[in-house]
Length: 156
Image 1 (cartoon, rainbow, N blue to C red):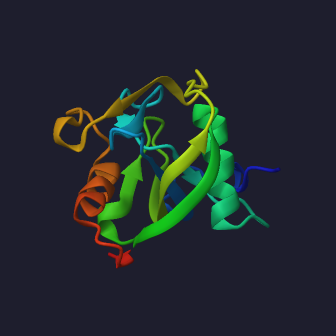
Image 2 (cartoon, rainbow, N blue to C red):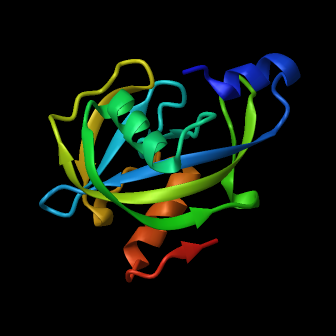
């Protein structure tokens, strides 16, 4: 599958683009959240990524989780939709994005978490009460939403 964002970047450079994306909150039996230590920012974050052309959000979630953690998503519950100025992010190379991200809670998954060593160098489960300091700001907001989630879809 061709990477849509890379195609756009070739045409416009680092200028801010609007990117539809997905985030996975992968929960273990201790109610801990799986985070990856990103190689590009040295920050912890959720498995996440952009939705490609001709792909559903659910397909993108499964693909991104598999690529970044080697886990298979068995079931996923849509939790929230995040958009707006708080969802802006600048990568170390200067590329700017504003996300329109659908977050899923993944409590049923299979496999052994293994970092891809490309986007992430380490995977670790964290309690919500003990999240790392260097958490990607947009993902910090997503985890705040998760902490208050009561089964009603959140839009912000």
